[in-house]
Length: 178
Image (cartoon, rainbow, N blue to C red; front, side):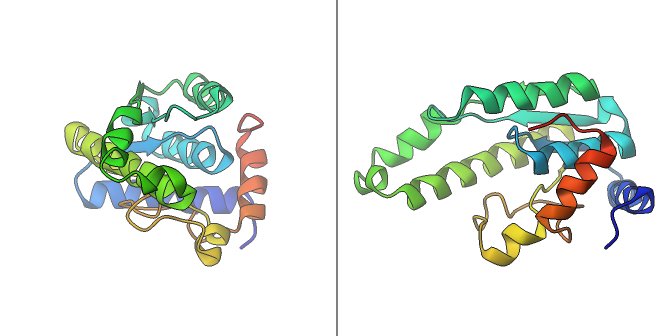
C-alpha cells in the first residue's frame, strides 16, 4: 500500500461509510500518546469533524506522564473533546483477588488493556459512537495485541498498515512527533 493522499482519502471515506452505515455520527478513540492512536484520531477528525471524535485517555498508576502530555497535544491540535478515565482502581480491585497478578507483567498488562476497552465501549454506548481501533498490521501479525483488549474495536482504519506505513502516514497528516 502506497502512503499518499489517495490512501488518506480511502481511510477517511472508510470511517465515513462505516459510521453512516450504522447511523452513527461519532467516534470514540483511546488516546495513548503513541503514534497509532494519533494517526487514527487525525483520520477520524478528517472524516467526521472535531466535535464528533471523543478522545479518551485511560492512565494507570504506572503510566508515563509523557503519554498523557502527548495525547493531550493531539486533543488540542485536533480540537476534539476529551475525557480522562483513570483505570487504576478498577485494575487494582481485580488484582487484589489474585496476588499472582502483580508478579506477572503479561497478565497485568492484559488486564489493563481489557479494562481500557471496557471503558471505550462504555463511552461508545454513552455517546452513541463507534470505537475506533488503533492497532497496526505489524502488531497484529506479531501477536502484540491483547484479545478483547486493544484488538477489540468496531472499525480499525489502520489495521492493514504496517508500522512503517503508520509513521509515513503520520508525517503526511502532520501529526505531532511522539
